[in-house]
Length: 504
Image 1 (cartoon, rainbow, N blue to C red):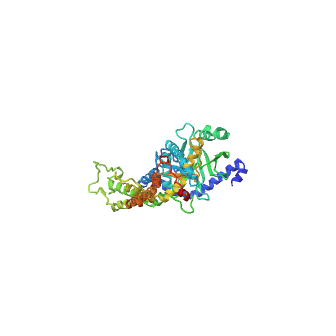
Image 2: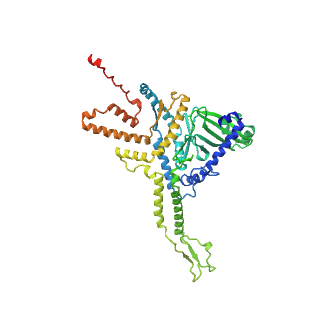
Image 3: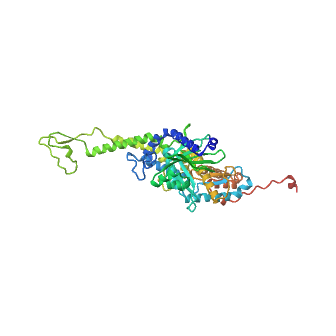
């Protein structure tokens, strides 16, 4: 495919890319109704998949129960705090398995400085805001996307993040199961096009149309896919009035769009979300609350009947305190109708539905405890429970989000000269995730090690002599996330004496 496009002209390449984008949208169309239901009931303030939506517009007018929306906010906030906590180091670098043993200790402080520089750049950027929005998308629609770009010179940080809405994306899965082919549809004004691609790249007709209507937005389609020569190919096509135009054809060393999923079903490209699992209960709870409110309005105002005696005009009757309603002598006047039933059972049904919604969205298990004091054992048990709940999801988020995110950020910082030019290839230098969720299992291992040390210590000095205390201390420091620069270099073991030396 890429060799054929290389031989073709820019116009044919632009048309081919638009055709591929159209086919990707056709494959995505089967998901859109499901996504629309999920966003309407669980993330109503989002404008995703809303035709003609505008900023500040009222949304969620038909939403009567806010249990799902509240649980989605809590789950997204828990993911942000447990995976990428703001102003706390959640990613580090360590010597890889292929690095020589004599280079591990000298390079450890340098890698720690690189990780500190990376965390400082992330903290000064808009990462926390955009990452939270991406987590809201992955919890609601099952698929999120975060765009990592290099900020312009003079910005507070070298990194700039953008949460890309699912409605703008069309994804394709590669042979290895990664979301490595991505289309994004972006509407830009003439000023936006000129800022990104230059005025000379714009055709005369488009410039004239943009000058006549500065608010007009022109549709651009971006495509990022693996390049046969290595890295990632990035191309932008403008859907102009005179036909498609290839605006840019570039190359990235790392994927700038980080697409990730909550749950992947076999044979599907897009992810499945916890909101999709709870959607039947969410819709039912919403309908129950709607019926309860209707019944409450009837209970307050009542339903009345009156004889048509020519005196009473129901159109002029106002049921307000102190009102006098005329009636004919001997007529029944207004008579209230008895309600056909009571809705007391609805509260029981609603409580059960809300409990199932919060359980499906993990709001009842990831919420903070009310107890202000927790023992160390309680903290470890709660961390272990969180690891069990999010174990499979955390593994996918680590491989699809965290590791590619760190690699992309380091590539930008290396190009800026803010970190040493050391390739993070997983063999000589590896990425280590240090988020609270990742440390939970390490804390369990450290607890087992401490109990073992206490047991052999109780057995006496001979039993304690079997343990390498220096190695145990290093293991506990590693499990606790202690920076390598705070540890002394490991002392190499002394060589064993040969028989000749013993005789001497």
